[in-house]
Length: 343
Image (cartoon, rainbow, N blue to C red; front, side, top):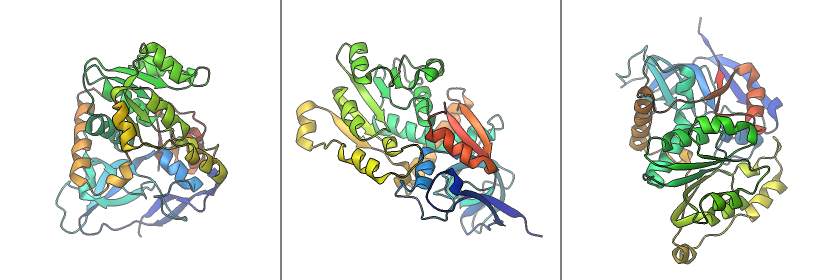
């Protein structure tokens, strides 16, 4: 009798009630693929926005979303000899990861050490890859840099704080609600800023003596990109990697989305030249063809974990049946660190 795979389906765009767990026969790996029995899958803001209908790269519902997970290889497709069945791995998958069994190209899995839990492994691919790419490939982080991280208590924010600690003398500033500040400090954030009760622009200027920062990691979008840009010092770089401001309590409000887009600043080459600043964009989902780059970064992150230099913070784990609650944690900004889904 065939085993049954369980997956979280987005049946249509809407709130958490559109999520449904369905069963189907286990998939078979195609040539070049491996099959993984999933022990944990990561949940990201991108998947929440996909459910809302606000993520343009997502497949149309009904669909299964999810970019990352961890588990054990149990079958190999034609032409694949390694990793061997029984190997514990983390993986990247361009949608479909929120399932108990997945088939992915062998090039998109990385073996993990025995000391790494499946929850930790599932929390690494998207958040840590995004942070690593922004800091080291795009911003070229240097010793002594000052870095402002928005949404610093989220999965990418925590990853960025930990990665900044691997470079000597980097000073970090993080925006988050006051309840999350103590955790940010434990992660090495030098200056935690409550965006709800203070103007983070004024606060960063005060803390830097008016000089500004070298790097801003901004997933807020809209008018906040303009504010972040204004905080850049000489040769500073704004890295835009999300538009969280488009989210509005789980609803697809097109008027609100248009309002945010209309308030997005326009950057011109001459304008950038005149102030010696830079703007870069990062979308991990559009780097899918860069197999060697992604795998090299994943392997570097696994090494940093093994050395004890990074460690994901798991905010909460939810069963597949509790997927709506998991989505709500991210939508309502309750999470500190990563939310994982457990089949």
